[in-house]
Image (cartoon, one colour):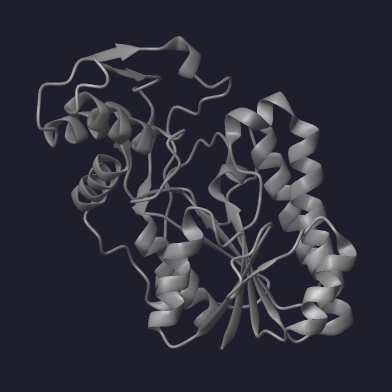
Length: 300
């Protein structure tokens, strides 16, 4: 298949490109700058530019990764997150309806749309309770996509995922980067936020394999969780990372890293995607942490 990845230059994009190409799919990408090869410059907020792209390129599937995603920033400018994430989606669907209505879409949403829950693990039919502006923008994005019922749309809701290349502003890569800096003597200790919460972490390489299988086998107009199915306490995650360090590490708590709305427990079920596509996580969590730490050792 000819597959377009929006936001291909982010954390997930390069991993997804490798996964799709290894499965013999041909991949195009769009971002704001392009690379002169198979990544094209296209401002997804520009309706005319989006229509021009789809007029020039026929694709079988769009994986819509592009979005504003940093939760902390969403608290600072919630309207911007809503406007940008929904407008990009509107423009893609408007172009497809006019120029390529048979093209399918994998809309990459987020488990954050579930928000605080009382029953675990979280299934796809759980009540939606987005607790931050980013999550609200992604739910609005889902609603916009499903409004176009004539376009084959599959929605993924990935829980936390980690691995080499992740933004240093999120928990695991932040821990790993700081450990790498301490190992090199560039930092004296590592600064952390809330370590009492429980989270569900999958490896990004497992996540992109799930995306590929949804493209190949997922049912249109359906929602799928992608997760490990396990809850991990953040203090245990940090302890495991520290155990991989080459020298003793000191930890200090930083209240500025506490989120305004931190859910104490959050983990999901991947039963639906497993039953329908055969997917299940395969990469051990310790390998995810080791590979993330090794990535930051090189980066710093």
